[in-house]
Length: 183
Image (cartoon, rainbow, N blue to C red; front, side):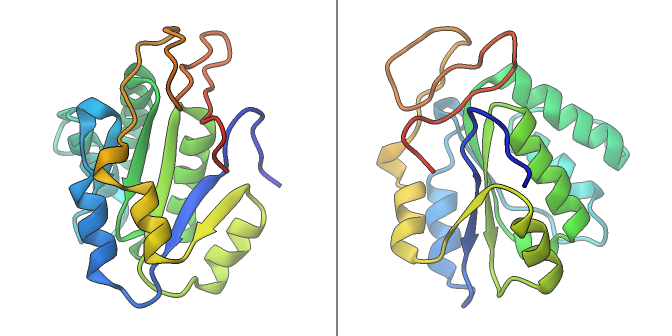
């Protein structure tokens, strides 16, 4: 199983009925300065635009024609520079297993806690991928609201600050962080 020490599992919100409340709740919690980033991806063929969309959600501007590889590297660099945060990706059901694997790797190797909102049943390929990585599934609106409550925004922390919040700053030598008591 893909597991990284001192990291919580990635979170998959399973919205089987495509309930608009899940999307509205996530979007209402978007507060980049407070460490909560919500990405509502552009509907387009291929996965290249997701990296652009995440960069825009992070407040980072990028070249219009970044390749998928350069886009992923740019997102990784932006997340490393930002420090601890929660990144929610809506419309995750539109991404294939390859992009999901890239996003799970991003969760495991940066200080961002990724939340994937999947607005349908899990297809077999994605269920297979998830069987091999550390994850948790939230499948109720109440669980989604708890993850994205506007009053429950994480505070942005400077690296190494040691501030007493539920987010622990990144360890400079390992470039890893974790959320206490979650997962």
